[in-house]
Image (spheres, rainbow, N blue to C red):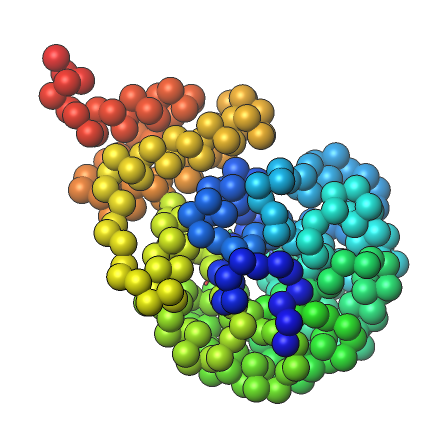
Length: 327
Ligand SMILES: Cc1cc2nc3c(=O)[nH]c(=O)nc-3n(C[C@H](O)[C@H](O)[C@H](O)COP(=O)(O)O)c2cc1C
């Protein structure tokens, strides 16, 4: 049941791969806050094979992010193998993860992501091809099935294990559910029971208490967190505290939130380019960091219009000390 990546803690918390969110800047923030393992956003094997620059940039990371997995997707075993080989040689992550969970239409129409779940023989061919193309551990991330009618996470995960996956992350929803309903943690428990390899639980973990609950409910070997970490990298810190039997740290006050938001923003400018595009794409993070604050909706509306990080900083300063700003 050995984990396929080095982790300083026996029960790792992983930052979920999330397109447009789990990029290098946020991965670095989350690692510092207590995430044990991070993953890249999903990258198209066809685009990697064709050396498309934008896609290859998605595979770049800095040393502080390790241990890291690069996630790839695609329906063609040859393209997947070639992508895995290139990723292994040029980027040297700790592991390669295969996405069998993506529900996005553009992806599943070409049988990528969760589209593969309609043909489990194909799933196995893809895993075997990737395993044969890299010396790195290969892990997989899946949903519980394509639709309710074919929902069978245990059979799916067993086929993945048989094909050589070294760990399975289960997002316990079907493709047709997209993000509706609740992730079925009983299904995660069922897969844990059936498999010999580690199973990482995923779905609807939004608080530190959820982390402890999912662990005891499912017996999983680690937990992957996605949307709950939006603007809240402290979730990793808090989860680690509860898992270690320590008291829950106090909530970050507005000043700390803004400091981390700005640190995240500066990393984005350094790593993604000091451009208007970077700032526009960063606006969503600014909004998330203010969630729950007094006057958050007004704050968010202003942050969604910033054209530079200096503007965001000025808005934060005015929020913390409105009197000084007027004077
Ligand atoms: C904006 C966004 C982008 C995502 N991108 C990916 C991706 O690139 N690869 C992947 O395997 N899952 C992706 N997911 C799914 C998440 O990794 C995760 O499985 C899902 O959000 C459920 O976990 P959560 O309830 O903790 O958010 C994405 C989810 C969101 C919200």
